[in-house]
Every structure is written in C-alpha cells, then in structure tokens.
Length: 195
Image (cartoon, rainbow, N blue to C red; front, top):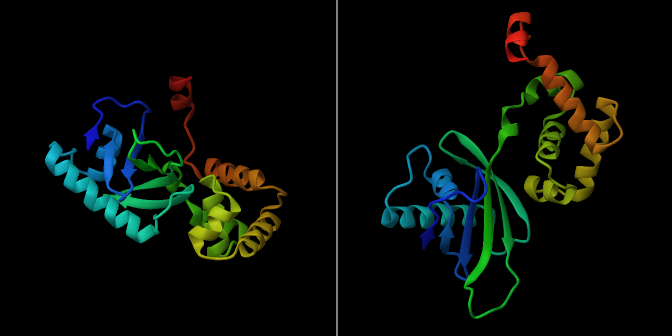
C-alpha cells in the first residue's frame, strides 16, 4: 500500500480499497486521521494499523458496497464523517474497488441540548436536525438512524413546525442563528482588535 507524502486536498483523508476491501492507497491525512492521537507510524506499522481500523469500520457499518454511504466514527476524541463510494470501472490496470473519504466533523461542536430545549425537540427530532446540518439526505438519515424515510419526513415536518420554518435550509438557519445567540458575547475591545 502506498501513502502520499503530500496532501492533495486539505483535511480530507482518501483511501482506496481493493476487491477484498484491503487498503491499496491512503493519503497522509487519512493516515493522520486513523492513527490519531499519535502521529502516523512507519510504513509497515501503518499498513497494519490501516488494515485493522478499516476492517473494523467496514464490519461495523456494513460497507460491502459503498454507494455513497455516510457514517461517523471516532478516532481518539475527534469525530469524523466518512463517505464510501463503489468504483464502477472495470479495467485490468486498476485494482481499486472502493474509495473512502474521511473528514473532520466540525459541526459536532454545536450545542444541540440548548437548541432542543429552545424549540422543544424530542431526542429523535434533534438527532435528525443534526444530520440535516451534516448535509445528509432523508434517505441517508433513514439509513443512519435505522428508520424509514417516511419517519424521517415526519421528524423533519414536526421540527419545521416547532422552529417555524418551511424548509430544511430553514432548520439549518435556525440552528446557526441559535448558536450565534448562545455564543459568548464579544467585548467591544475584542471586536475592534479583529476588525
């Protein structure tokens, strides 16, 4: 397996898997993500680490085929979002079968407990709103929560009613609005020094 020394896309890990779902390529960011909180080890140890971590992720998330499946996983104390896609080309030159993208989930820092309280959301409505914030479609949310797409639509509808909005974008807007309001106020001196 090869590991690129240079990041081609900042903060996005990239892994190519062969037909046996074993890693054949990983960029440096993928190595950093999967070995966090330690630094990526030497190549031989890195190959074993990646194989072991990926085997566990594949088993836990039923990744026999990628088809755009999205899930989250922890590496150290950090949460990452993973998207897996099956590669459809059939050539003798490429053994790659699946590509996996890993990226840091920055939206986990949002305080959904305060938002849930403010809009009187049930835990499932709040979780659905979180996944909307991650950019997931209704089908992706249904798979992630192991519920039907119609149940997702119901959660989205009741969330929209409680937040007094009419679209998924409105949900995102309300959440971001709330986060700004919940953030600590910036003093006039701090505002002037950054402006």
